Image (cartoon, rainbow, N blue to C red; front, top):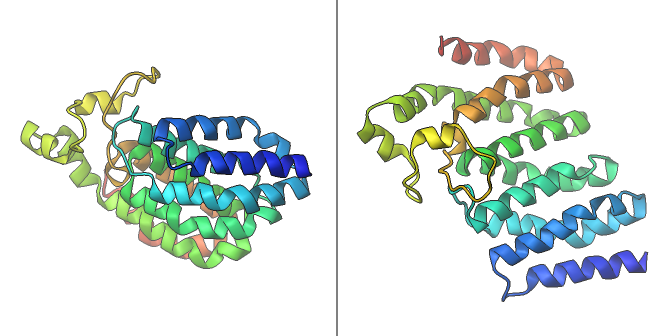
Length: 237
């Protein structure tokens, strides 16, 4: 047990090192990600969450949002979300999951499409694992999905309209074309512009899947929300 604690303390110290840049922090968290399974025991997991989770959450809230796919900031933010997604959603993790709901919704609202999709999947998994605890937050999450659907006409205009409209809607961090963003390449060295999550067809495509997942966990609540949600879907056609 003490060995695990010392190991985690080392990770924390490296992450808190003020001289570390985003690439260095990414390397540290990559190492941590590779060792996650060693902390799946009850006591080990409790210690892991107590020592590491606050720092991971702090990094998610402090590392700047980037709309460039291979920027150090984006790689680090995506890895942080990947680590969160890999954590076992058991009783031990429940209080930490509750603390994550709002930051994850903020990612969907403000961040790029890759991080937004990851956050949506994480929130869906939380609703499946902690049904009763999160029941009162279902409607608020559905309202967020509705807002995304309501953006579709604007997204179509931004991504398929004239060049002036398209260039104005693109994040200013890159001159990559919309077509490059729509068809991402696997090569991590290839720079591409990522759309904002709430203005992304990739995220829109995840919404029906998310609704089905929510329905399986909160059938009674979803039954009352579906009539409000369907018109937004029908409006696309």
